Amino acid sequence: MGLGILQDGINEVIATTVNPETGAPNAAPMGIIHRNGRTMMRLFHGTQTEANIRASGWVVANLTYHPMVYVQSS
Image (cartoon, rainbow, N blue to C red):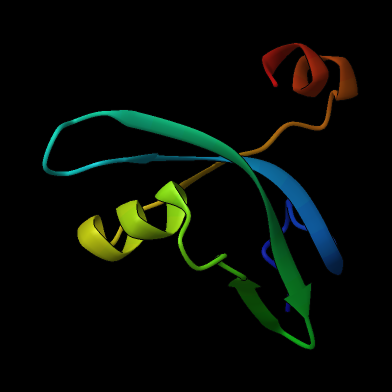
């Protein structure tokens, strides 16, 4: 069963996080992997995105179907 908006395979998104100590925002390209009914993100050790997610427990994946909105937003 899919999540509706995600396709099987790797879905490229812009992930946004916040440092809970300083309130500093962070945005980074991220792949959401959807395979065999499982959805996951692979975090890279040592990145600000990983540190923020581990500290706060939150990540927001920004999705769009319109490719030019994605390019202009990035």
